[in-house]
Amino acid sequence: MTENSDPEIDFLEQLGQRVRTMRALRGMSRKVLAKVSGISERYIAQLESGKGNVSIVLLRRVSNAMGAHLEDLIPAAEPVPDWAVIRDLLRKASPGQIAQAKNVLAGGAASAQRHLSFSGIALIGLRGAGKSTLGKMLAKKIGWSFVELNKEIEAQNGLSVAEIIALYGQEGFRRMEQAALTQLLARKELMVLATGGGIVSEPLTFDLILSSFYTIWLKAEPEEHMARVRRQGDLRPMADDRSAMAELRNILLSREPLYARAAAVVDTAGLSVEAAAARLSDAVAPVLQNESRMFARG
View (cartoon, rainbow, N blue to C red):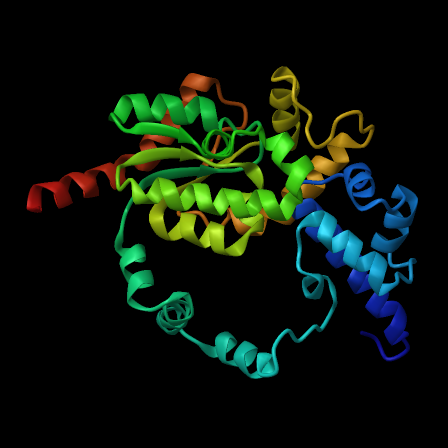
């Protein structure tokens, strides 16, 4: 903030940025957010640009529509009394100390046991990255089962993903996603898991992916994502949106820091399916070798 800046204008601009980032993280266009929240698309555009002095009631409708916590949208929010102390301690903590803190907060020994388990390989990335196609090919090659998390969610709840979101909203879908993942891990079998593009938007679920699987980000250029999705005949959640390409870029920009937490990145830009599959096989080779050694020692 500059010396001559208006703190209220700065606050509204930060608020707008948080709303825009959260919307992109959830993979929602302005049109979809407007429809779900019941707030006009024009008003949401004003809010995101920092020009809309939104009431707390309307902001709550926006956060509910995105399945987000209201406090996550408010700049400088302090969710618990000791948050400032906890935040500063976390900034100074080593990775080991952070792991211990997460273990305590997640339930101690049970959580520690969970982190010791290895469930296979998880593929993350935007729709159109090739998670299903390449995941099936990889699973067949290495002899593991292939699982699409969204199909597991549909099977467990007897509803399509679209129906779940229509009935229960983003928050309900993320809750079912975490439950489906927990049930998959309880099988204790090695698998290649294809996740939904927005799984990174739910911190606890994504942490469970990162701690239980060797996670790989399948990466491509935005234009390739869009072309592949169009070939699939699925533009959700960007259907009939003239700014679909801009929305997709915004989604990718918001999610990239989270996708980048994967253990490995496989860039499929410009590659044929066969070439991309070969690159993915190369990426998992060290993991398979390590599993073979562990099996031999066992």
